[in-house]
Length: 183
Image (tube, rainbow, N blue to C red; front, side):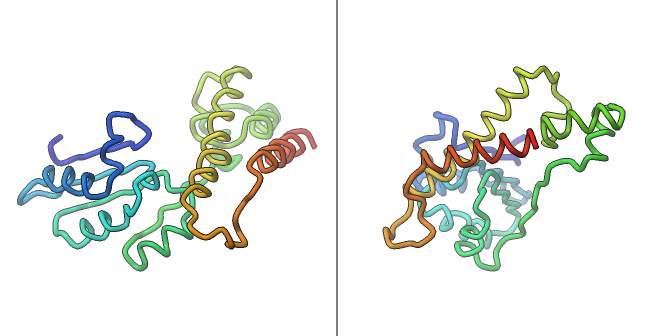
């Protein structure tokens, strides 16, 4: 247990660690001398200049570091050039969905098209209300929160990729989801 350090920056108790110097000091104090220390940092993009912490830990022997929740891997590649391995997490294929749910092909296809292939959706007690609540949470995290957070971190107003109208983005995403779910 002492060799594993897990921080989820969405949890309020870690808010003060969103300062990269405090985060580094916190992690350095938890390194196990002579043993591998496994560090998991979720939603790391909330820490300004987090790449300084990651770079510094990367060069230390016996540190195995995992950064999760960072949706914008192109940005991550720029910040951590050559110092990371990206592990992409994909939704379940239709075949995998059928294996997990035990559904027949016809019913399974209907469920897969309606609910999607996210692993948790396949194993949860799938009532329409529970699935809708879960998927709305994913939508709010990925489309809304991550993009809004990224926009807030943008330094250049002249960036051509900048999204100026988050409400329009939300409307387009919901429209696309509705036509994909109801062809």
